[in-house]
Image (tube, rainbow, N blue to C red; front, side, top):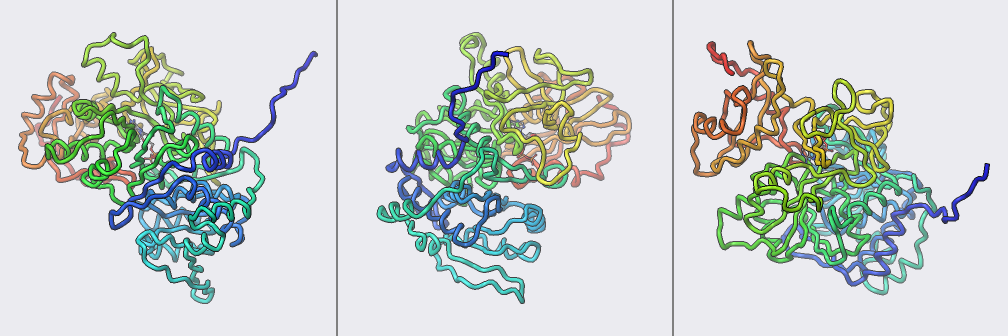
Length: 569
Ligand code: ADP
């Protein structure tokens, strides 16, 4: 056979190349972090580059070995970004701990991952203390986020205490506390660890909305490919001209991969620190107007409600675009931002998918083909899959057609999608024999490739043998002007198997009768899909990542009883 070999260099894909690229080409670009006292701290990429390499040098000096896990327990800020690149540069894998989890879960996760070191914000030390007894880190490196002095101490084996180090002192010792001269010092001193492109750079546990947390381990290869994908003009269109506000936490699903992609391109970054209240975010947008802001729908809902309730108090940055995802994005939210000049695009993804797997943009052949309602309906989909992600809908009888009607389980595969979980047997509930990830989401895809998530397998409501989508009902309810938010759950029903119960939060000062709401929904839903039970509640419980926590709602309404004569629909 006449064979031929590639002439391309076998250079591994490496996060370290992105770090070097940014340090050399974008030293003047800025990274702004909001501190606990709400003041803004500024670094140039040049300073950040030096500090990142100094962190890598310091970790090696402390004895970090290739493949060791370094956990982070931090808000979104420049030092967390240093960990994103500095830990892999030193050969380690960064393990982001989700600070909204219960201490028991944090201890379990750190132990399961066998984390050696921890980098923690000083303001989060009380949280660390609550799970310190469950996992013994060798060293706890404290970042003085609040500006207070850090009290260092040696390890105390007798009492089982980890050594405590001051993050800033470690960096200064390694010659990179942020002065221009330090950049040269640290750059000269530090050598990257040789690695394969499939070596780990980071890990994250799924937040456990369902079942026990499971660890996903990202590689240099998957992270670089995902970063390139994030940047593509039809999708996030990230560029050096952007000012990016990632409200998505860096402690969950890599803040959607934005920190890696932004550094690769030299985008200016504005980190909100711990200030995620809608009013704080709107204040920050006045101080540092972003061109791109990213977050989950619940925070965006709060933001638009605060904005519209206080005319004249804030401006939404002119031309700002916004990516929202992680949970269903109601069409009413997209319309509300559009009314105020902000383009909102929905994305779909999971911790397992790095996470951006699909994102909305309008394909040119669809320009001008739809009326306003149809256009917004399409905007409320999760968009089309990004390049390199293959997607199929698995129905009972095999892969479903992309006709916009047939629903089934959404399954995906690709080079930045996990093929297993860290130290877990590969289970058929999560992966198919032919190599696809089973997402647990129920979806349809239209002939143009737009994905519409209708539910999670566990959240579907089966009434009289027919499925009701809780997501569609929630969206319809949230379109009512008096409704702030709504979540729909299934309640066992003696006749119908299950019927929907709608938990509704009203906007402040608004009143609504169940009958009025049902009347409002009637033209939008089939009669048997209308929720017969509507409960007005003060708030919808949230998971650690800000999503509706239906498990808690189901617990709360576990004893719900239908009236004797309940025969609907
Ligand atoms: P967890 O399942 O622990 O919340 P992730 O944060 O990784 O973990 O969330 C992934 C899940 O979030 C998806 O499987 C899906 O159910 C939901 N999700 C993400 N984006 C969207 C979206 N745009 N619309 C509806 N659901 C979404």
